[in-house]
Image (tube, rainbow, N blue to C red; front, top):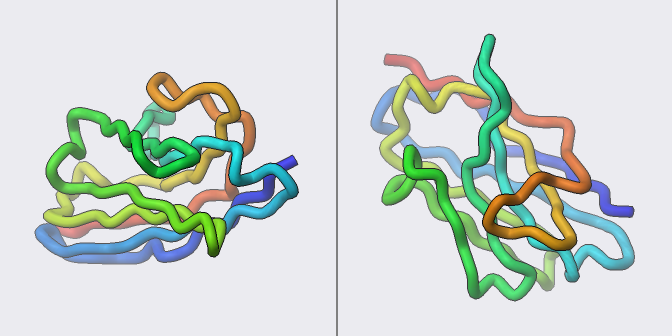
Length: 121
């Protein structure tokens, strides 16, 4: 069992930056790849970024490559999503996910409750 709690969402102007955090807990959390998904109003949830348990491997959706950076601190059991050059199209609820077996093609075995990111034009 893995529990995930996101924080750091908010309202930002286009071109601005935000950093999301996801605190993970559970006895085996360090064995899980962690990632971020997002869901905009009226759209399906989509993959954003993922990072392996070691932090060595990272994957990004094409739409965020070069703008977003995922990282994790295993001492703090926390994964971060640094979001730069934000666009109105990045507006969504962002969800943290944990996956035991998949990094690329992450589906998510456990999910956080989500944090709202709104980018104004």
